[in-house]
Image 1 (cartoon, helix red, strand yellow):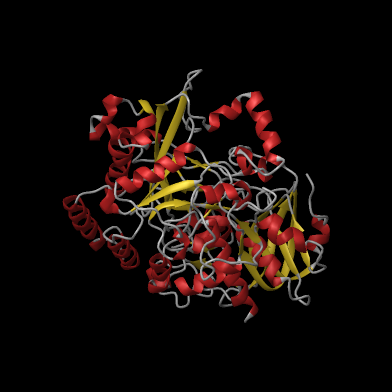
Image 2: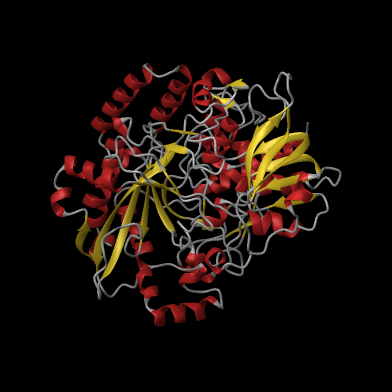
Amino acid sequence: MATPKITPEQFASTQFDYIIVGGGTAGLVLATRLSEDPSKIVGVIEAGDWDPNVNAINIPGLCGSILGNPQYDWAFMSVPQKHANNRPVFQPRGKALGGSSMLNLLGYSRAAAHEYDAIEALGNPGWNWQEFLKYLKKTETTLPPSDIAKEQGLSMPDARYHGDSGPIVKQYPTWFNPLHKSFLDTLEKLGVPRNADPDSGINMGGVTSFMTVDSDAVRTYSASSYYQPNASRQNLFVLTNSKVAKINFREGFTPLLATGVDFITGEQRYTVSARKEVILAAGAFQTPQILELSGIGNKEILSKYGIQTLLDLPAVGENLQLRSRIRAEDHVYVYSIYEIDPSIETVDDILDPEVFARQQELYKSHRGYLSSGLAAVFGYLPAKAFASEEQLAQWKADALAAAKNAPPGLRKQLEIQIDWFLKPDSAESELLPFPGFFPGSTLKREPGKRYSSMVASLLHPLSRGSVHIASTDPAAAPAIDPNYFANSLDLDMLLNAFKFTLDKLYKTGPFGDVVRKLVTPSSEVVASDDALKEYIKNNCGCVYHPLGSASMLPREDGGVVDPQLKVYGTANVRVVDASVIPLEISAHTQATVYAIAEKAADIIKGQ
């Protein structure tokens, strides 16, 4: 692969002002912004490689094709999930320059204003909707809708909420399937209206998502849009194929003063120094791992592995939130598959070599399936769309009862989440129609038939997980425990959202008019809530939005970093990635992470 040209020996001998651990979504934003000052020397250490010319990364319609490929994906697995029939669950993370912005499915969305305001309410002054909006706009350039997008009724969004000169280019999809429009039309019939601008502070409704795709129909991500245009800076150095082993600290100094890091390239271990700061941008799974390997974390966990505790900070690695396609904070999901009218084209058709060849020709003029991402439209549903007033009241009572026994910091979070699922404009479940056979299914397509799939996810799970070291080996995977459905209300809420798709969406026209039969779950499973819960446990997955494992909260509330993103008890270690977000958000996380990194750069420059 094409890599930035610096050897590990040269890197180790350089005296840096800032060392950034992780050249992913946030890390390269920071590196680019901090190196704008030519007097500051910035170094980035990235475990993966980089090749700017990989079609599977750059061509939007091929997004997802390298998930699980160890060259680009850490391809972690969770520990067996106690409340999901002891299944380990796949947890992909980007492993190349650009991190998960290189690996993701291109969706570029924001949380609701009240979710960003909640981050401030939890004890973080300056981290609110208006402040986020400033940085969300700074990251992006919004392209006008194409003629194809205009045919879908889309128009240029309000400039008050959208950027026009940032590095990340976003635009509406340039390819739509007939099922996309019928999905949005059917949601409207079921009481979920279209939302023309879900990025303006209220994201509930049927929406068409922006994609991180430029005017040449190429993915735009942190490596291509932040780093590459600035790679020739004489004060910016990026070392790839190297893994940070630990942060080094000056002995006898309180608060802890980082002096640099140890890193490993091949079989060789090196030490590099930082005059000002060490900044962790390794993501929600590996940032806590590096902190623990460095002696910062729960002393009981550290002592188990013979690591000297330099700073007893028990919150490190806790509060992990994963949305599941069903979800447990990441977002957790579950899916269904239907056989549909065979006259409707689907993405499965691209498996035919002749169809793929035609799509390749269309792509040359920035048209067709390959020019756009897989996920064009979504439904963001309030809880009232899939639960009765009686159910909502019972969920509230059960959740409040559970919250009373939680530690004070977690109780504050849960009370906010309980308020959200009672709000009529708060999105609590995300629906994604996929015009094809669900890629994660172990079932097989029947030749000559066409299919549609539906993914339902829970956006604000009440369960909390953890991620901790499982070895003193820096190359070993951490122990990732999303703890899906530890709070049984998550399973109940996901069940109801899933039943909304099975009982209403697929049985209401125009979307339901094309359905021929249900493939999975079976009709026998659908007839029983208990059976559906087992189906969910056996088929749930994560939506790849982990966060919260080094939360920005007051220390007494389970925080790891303060509002300046500095690790408590240290003088010069910061965390800048999704692990600082204390509450799961109803959005795909990349836009928010870009904004956090932009704000972090301003914080650091101002000190």
